[in-house]
Each structure stands twice: as C-alpha cells, then as structure tokens.
Amino acid sequence: MSILYLIIINILISSSSDNIYCLFNRNYLAMTAKIIDGKAIAEQNLNKLKQEILERENNDIRRPCLAVILVGDDPASSIYVNKKKSACENVGIKSVSHQLPTDTNQSNLNDLINTLNQDEDVDGILVQSPLPKHLDEELIIELISPNKDVDGFHPFNIGSLAIRQPRLRSCTPYGVIKMLKASNINLEGLDATIVGVSNNVGRPMALELLLEKCTITSCHSRTKDLEAKVRQADLVVVAAGKQNLVRGEWIKKGAIVVDIGINRINNKLVGDVEFEVASQNASYITPVPGGVGPMTVATLMENTLQAQKLNAIGLQ
Image 1 (cartoon, rainbow, N blue to C red):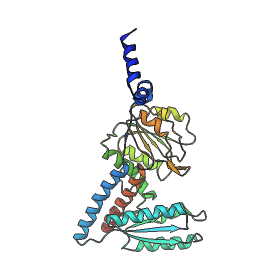
Image 2 (image 1 turned 45 degrees about the vertical axis):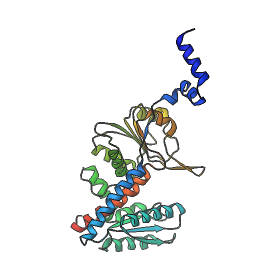
Image 3 (image 1 turned 135 degrees about the vertical axis):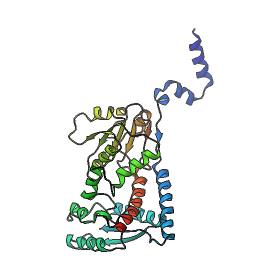
Image 4 (image 1 turned 90 degrees about the vertical axis):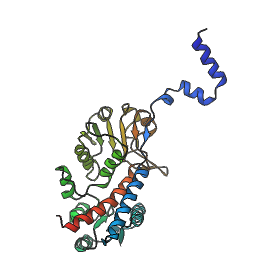
C-alpha cells in the first residue's frame, strides 16, 4: 500500500465533509475571481463629489441642479428616478422633478426640454427611459443641449468621445472605466470583447476602451461564433440583457469580466454572465446587483457637476 494512499485514507477518516469535498472537487481548487465592489467604489466617488460641491458652495458657487423628467407611471422607472433623486440629495445636488402623464404629446415634451435648455439655473437634464411608444426618444435625446446631456447620449457627446475629446460621457461605460481603474486594473493593450452594441452602452463602451488603448471586438446578434470571441478576450464586457448569454466556461483563465446586464428572474436580479462558473476562471468579476449599477448613478452625479462647469464657461 503506497504512502500517498495511506495519507488519503487518513484524511478521509479524520476530516470533515468540507475537507473531503475540497479534496475531490476540482472546481473548489479552481481560481476564484476577486469580486469588484462597485457599490463601495461608487460611495468613495460620491463622497469626493460631495466634498467638492461643498467647497464650491463655500466659495459662493451655487449647487448644481439636475432636472429629471418622468413620463408615465412605470413602476421600474419611478424606482430609478427616486434612486437618482436620493443620490442628488446625498451629495448636495438640487433635483427638480417633472412628472408628466402617459398621454403627454411630443410637442409638450419638446417645449419642456426647450424651457429647461434655456434655464440658466438648470445644469443637467435627464429624461427617464423608456418613454411611452408614441414619443420619439431619439428626437428627445438630440433636443437636449449637449452641455446639459448628463446621460451622455447626445450625438455630439458620443462624437466627441469618438475623436478622443470627451465631454459629457455615457454614465454606464464611463462608470465601468472608473471602476476598473479604481481596482488598479491596467487596461492598456488588453484584448476586449464587448457583447452588445446599443447606442447607450455597447457602442460608447467600445469608444471608452479604445481611449484606454484596448483592442476591441464588438459582438451583436449576427456575430458568428460568439464563444470563440469571448474565449480569446482578456476583458469581457457584457450588456445584452439576456440571462446566462455568456457561459462561464467561455471565460479564459485570468480574464476580467464586467457584467452590465440586468435580468429579473423569479424576483431575483441576475446578469448576462453565468456568474458561478465564470468566477472560477476570471481574475476579476462584477456581481449583479452591486457591480456596475451603483457606478452608473455615481457617474450621473459627477456628470451633473461637470455640466455645471461646462455651462459656466459657455462651451458649445
């Protein structure tokens, strides 16, 4: 009987069931990713922002003001708006709410936005999406002054990012960059695969990563062999809105995984990545919830102050 066999038998006799599981379950011994705590990073950023706003106020500069427009009574939208209003209150930003009925017509919404564009006491304008189907969301985005576009959706602001002269940047992609940098992750030279090409997240995410000198692969519904594109990536960013679209075994060892997707399954929020398996392969991974979401709100607050600064110097 070999010495190794005797050692194993001794472990089985004297060990707890957890130790036996550890001995024979290969996954237990696999790499465990570091969880990126987006909530904690967002709180740090908000505390810095709060201090800056207070210092400006002590120097007789008024607090920034964010105008929030909510059309209709969608429960999820109401929750998001309340979270943003609460964040404003916490950092010292004044928020002004405009609650409009579901049947608000395009002309009346346009008039409200034009009024807010002209109001020198309003620094940022946010129109909560989704809008009722009879309203033209693209038109609304373009109607908001680029200097007050705190969502970072206006074509002018996306274009400025594309030519490497960023102004007001899309909150979720820019929040991801801030989160990764706060985690001391060096992005330069990484092969990055982005799953999802929406105007608000996927496309500006690609531009942000290009700005950080990553090599980009953007994937969409017509992409051939998504698995192969994910497997080769040092950094995987997923924003498709489909549970477990990216399988955990696709993630190569040591890759960084950012899951932007939010899906409600049986009253539980989950992302687009198969988290449990992916976390055995990745070096860093974001949870859902508690990862990217708080960074989006924090970046919105930072954008509101940035908008105030832009409006103060009259940039177009």
